[in-house]
Image 1 (cartoon, rainbow over the protein chains, first blue to last red):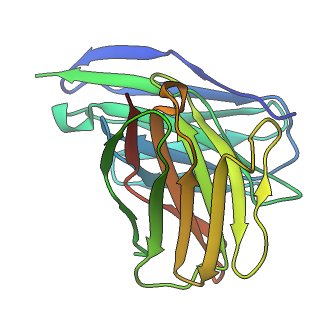
Image 2 (tube, rainbow over the protein chains, first blue to last red):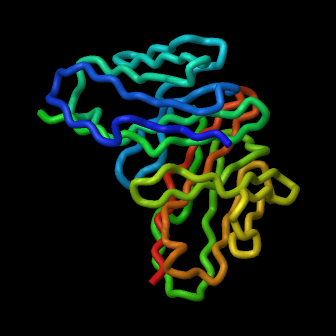
Length: 112
Length: 115
């Protein structure tokens, strides 16, 4: 059974700082990995999707990497802003089905 | 991008009543939709996979008679929580799968509170 772990559970940084969020998964046989953002009481916004054959994806100030063999992914946020404050969720899709397995998320607070 | 809506966004009901939540794909057809439940500070847990025109597939531990899922069209799936109890209070999120890109798009969620 796939398990996804995100570290840290919470992170508080001053505005402008670069930061890294970590995600690990137990079964490396994945189809893809996705990072989402969730604001309080809201649904999910997809940030980046990395296929199993890819090593990284970039979108603006966000960069996500994937090391499938070691079961790890990182989300790098450059020059953080207060508007980046949210919970960031990592999810992996299994190789044999469409199901997504989510981590518990990292609650990020960027202080002005 | 593809948009999924949910209705209602919030619902408060008395214990023992049934509540229906709608999930609609607004600008695409979703042959497959997914229903998740999220407890505070917890991850999203998949409850069931809903396929248009057929019975839903429930995850282990999810009572199919309590959580009724209907996917009658390519743009609408409904989740009915029957005889709701306070322990059913949670945040319910649906997603629709866009076949063309094999990507899931998530709805804004429904906050259910059972008194």
